Image (cartoon, rainbow, N blue to C red; front, side, top):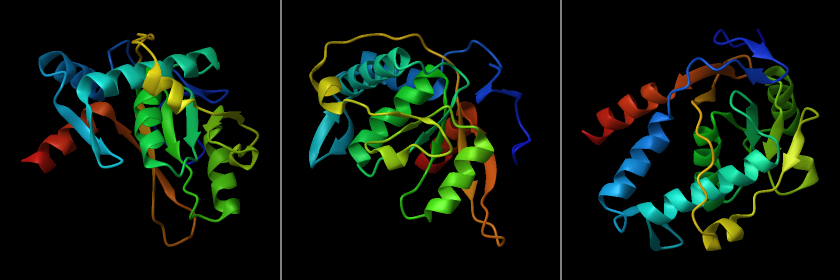
Length: 190
C-alpha cells in the first residue's frame, strides 16, 4: 500500500491503533512537571526550558487542530528552520499525526512522489511551493506560539514515517512508532 506495510489508510489518514497518549510528548511533559525550568534544548544559543517547550508545542498543536489536522493524518514538513521543525514535529506527534520529512535538499520530483505515495493531507511549510501532492499548506505561527499562554489540545498517538536510502533512487518508507523512538533514544543516551 503506497510502499508502507503498516496501518490502514483512508483518505490520507491512518486508523488509530490506540487511544494512548503519545510517548515522546508525554515524556517531555513529565520532565516539565518535574523540572519546568530545566533546559529541554538550546535554540538560537539560548536554553529553552521544558515548561516553555511544552507550552509552545501545545500552542502549535492547537493551531494545527484549528487547521483541520486529526489523528492519523499523514502530514509533510518542509520547514528549513530547525526551531520551527522541533516545535511543529512535536505538535504533530502530540496530535497523533504522522510526520513526513520533505527535505529541501531532495529534488522536487522526489518530494512530489513521496507526498503522493503517502497521501499527505497537509504540508507544514512557509511558501505555496511547499504544498506537494495536492496537500493543503499549513503555515505555523511560531512567534505566536512563543508568546502564547498554555493551551492544552487533545492528545493522540503517533508514528513517524522515515524515508531511508535506496539504490533505486526512490526512498523506502519505514514507520517508527513512538515506543520504538523512545527505546532508541534511551539506548543512545546510555
